[in-house]
Image 1 (spheres, rainbow, N blue to C red):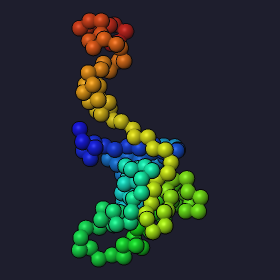
Image 2 (tube, helix red, strand yellow):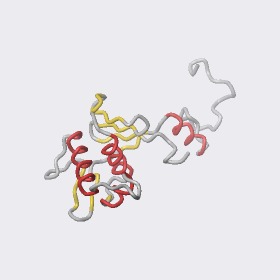
Image 3 (cartoon, one colour):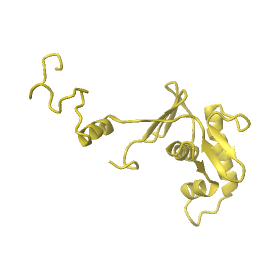
Length: 147
């Protein structure tokens, strides 16, 4: 399953971001974040610790031939992300600004696997889902306890 085809979910600090629903949650409670800032947040979460330059963000948000103030649009998206996360440019916990270079997500990010990804990974690695050492367990049928 490709990364882009799967439902991406991330956990960082007290937040979770779910690409399939377009939702950002803080301790399970939905935090309002519009589509474009959420898209930028996902770009940052896809590449934590790496610099994401303003041109990359602009190309992802607006197609060629779109006439907008790119600088203002990117600044606005980053400010909305910071506002939603309770972050600041002066003392960043999540989004760091690198002058004239771009932005970087600085907090640890955990990619949350979906159930389908977990099953797919187990099948691809030929490891059993129950964590046992045997490829097929102790028999063909499951034990009464497992049922």
